Image (tube, rainbow, N blue to C red):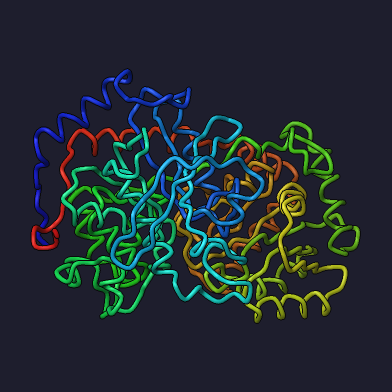
Length: 518
């Protein structure tokens, strides 16, 4: 691939830099903290304040808030019914129809802490039941390409000063495939506005038929290997990787892994090029301040590393809720989506080792029917020793972290992972595959147990080490103290993103092939 350092129009570059440096000329009432810093539009398809399907929702709620101390950060999200319900929404802009994408309004929502959220108001696309991506039967919406191309184009439009808003971002920060087309739309219109794409999970790429090019506004010249084409289809995620100023992932190990065939999902060649350009970065996610076992209102009792009485109370609550017998043995937990990626089959296979060591296991999650059924059968086979709840409940999840001694997390791949951070803060030692963010956030033998071979034997060996450690009160106390003292706040990630934004804004130089511009 040939990258081109194409300098923006000098007057445009000077205007952007001047606006960044001169708060008084910004023409907007601001947002309090960070109002005088660079303007960042954080574009996401989910946010836990309103709706979430996974870790992206948590990140989208936490990272913009962490950045507000130094940046004027605002969020752009589709106007799902969950976003709009019961909230004051002020229409502040209008975006025209383009290509095969409908017109939409832009609504503004001011959250209680001052964070501004813009919603793409287009009821025909977003006012639906289900999750952001699937209907109530769990099937992908047939027009997901239009739904998320509209989100991406709205982001590019706002960055281009369209829509009559009094606020225009200096940089777009887009997330995963649903907003990854935004850097491409900027490139095709020759805009100098820089962009950062964060890949939270490379396995989800947003692939659509090539006959959708005209509807999506993709130039024919961009449907090639140096563009959006991926094995004869349009790849939203590839578009973002190719056209964004910089690409980030949610851990350094995952950034390294996705440049290899084993983890690259067919995009490892392009990712190696971005890495060689110095444009691929890994920043570990954080967890918010609500994850504090001393003050968490979800728990049966609070506790800290110097007084674990509350942890024992949570263990009793978990055993009662999951139908487990009273026990002085180790309590293992699983809090997870029940899918192949998460190694649920390996956790099932490890049950024999856990029970042989005098342990019990409690499982909370939902996912693939085959795993839900297998776990329920396991609970019936070992009543009082295995407890399973299919579904998700925030209180039960937090009590599992607080009450368990160990968390099973044998993910085959894990871009970052949050559960292992939650568990350590609550004194539950993760037993995890050495991959992605798990390798970056767990210190083997100190704050948890890592294994390198993603197999039943590999997990069983690590479980054996955990059970052996449990038998030593001194060792468990030292490991729990080390785990609970870990710092997983957002300040480090926010600082890293701030440096990346400054670098991108200082360059103001999009990188794309001239033949893709239209």
